[in-house]
Image (cartoon, rainbow, N blue to C red; front, side, top):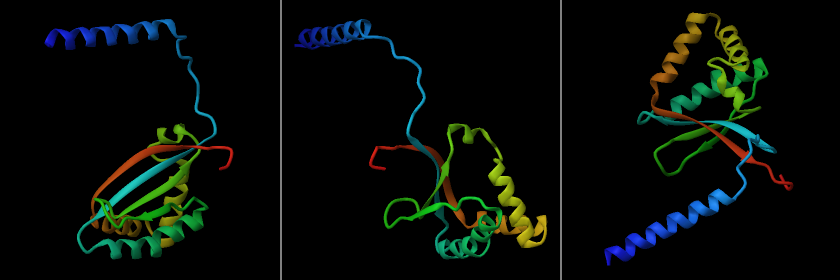
Length: 148
C-alpha cells in the first residue's frame, strides 16, 4: 500500500516538473491598474476606544485637513480581534520605503502648529498611543477592473 502511495507521489512530482520545464520562463513585470493601500489595524485597551475616536476627531483629522494630506478610510469592526482598520491610499509600493514620508512630515508640522508646540503635540500622541493595546500595519493593493 505504501509503495503505491510513494510511486503515485513520485509520478505526480515528475509530471509537474516536466510541465514546468516545458513552459516559458516568467518575465519580470510590474503590476498595472492597481491601487496601493497602507492598512493599520488597531485594538484599543478595554474601554478606551471612544477616547481614541474623540482624539482622532479633535486633533488628527484637523491636522490632516490643515496639511492637505489624505484622511484614512475607516472601518469599524463588529467582530474579530480589531476595533478599527484605517486605509490610506498610496501611489506605489515605493511609498513604503519612507520611514517618514513627505505627507507624514506635512501632517506633523500641521499638528505641531495646531497644538502650539512640539512638546504638546508629542504629549497628545503619547496619550493616544497609550490607549492602544495592539496594532498592525499591512501593505495591500487592489487590482482595478474596467468597471472600477
